Amino acid sequence: MSSIDAGEIGMIRDSKRLEAGDFCTVDISTVLGRKQPVVCSLTRVEGHDFRVLSMRTPLGETGNVEALEERYGIYNFAYENNFQTVRLCYDADAPDLYGVYMRVDLPVLPDDANGDNSLSAYELNKSLEALVECADMTERLVFHQQDIDMEAMHIDSRQLNRADDTLRKEVSTVKLSGKWRLAWNKKYIQLFEVLDKKVGTQAQLWTMNHQTPFVKFLTAQQKTEASLSYLAKDIQDKELKVLETYFHSQW
Image (cartoon, rainbow, N blue to C red):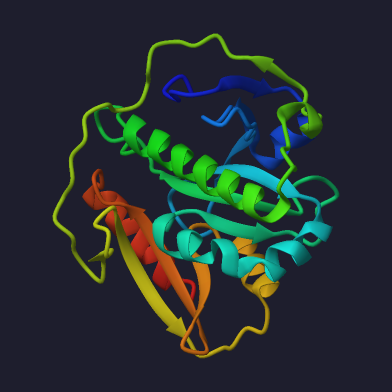
C-alpha cells in the first residue's frame, strides 16, 4: 500500500471487516475537490492459485440503483468504452453505502523464486486512477450534489506510516497469447464471451458484476456480453495465463 501515489491510507482495525478481507482505506480528493473514498480487500479465488486485490468506491445505498438505471444513457459510453476495467456493482443485501459501488480487481499471484510479485506500482495506481475518475464522473452526472466522504463510511482505521515502495516500478509487456486482443484505444487487452442468456435490467448485470471478480457484464446485440480487461502497458505472461484460465472457467 506504500506504493499508492495519491490519497491518505488507513489500515483497517475493525475485526469483522478484516475477516471479510478488507484491510485498508484510501481517502482521495479529486482535482475538483470532491471526495472519493476507496476500500481495498484481498480475497482468495476458489479453485485458483491467486488472490484478488479489489479496490471499491461507494455510490450509495441500494435505493440509488434506480437513479443509476434511469440515467444510464448519460454516462454509459464512458463507462463501457473508456473505463474498461471499472465495473459498476449492485449488492442488494448491503446495509451500507456499498449498495451500489464501482470496483477494479487486480490479480495477486504467488511470488516468484526471487520473492517478486507480478503486480506493479503502475498497475496499482493506473487502476486506482481509473476507478476514482469513473466513479466521480458517474456520481456527478447522476446524483449531482452527492459526495460521499470517508467520514460517512464509519470505518475504524489508523493512518499508515509509509515505508519504501514494495511493488515493481519498471513496466514491461509480453506478447499477447491465447484469445487476448487489444482494445480499440490500445490502453487495454481484453477477453470476450457472448452469452446466450438475456438479461432484462442493468441492475441484474451489476449484480453479476458484484458476484464475479474481474468480469464486466454488458448488453450487446440483445445478449449478455462478458469481458475481462487488463492494462496493456504492463502485463506478464503468468498474469495472462491465470486470468484467461479463470475467465473461461466461468462459462
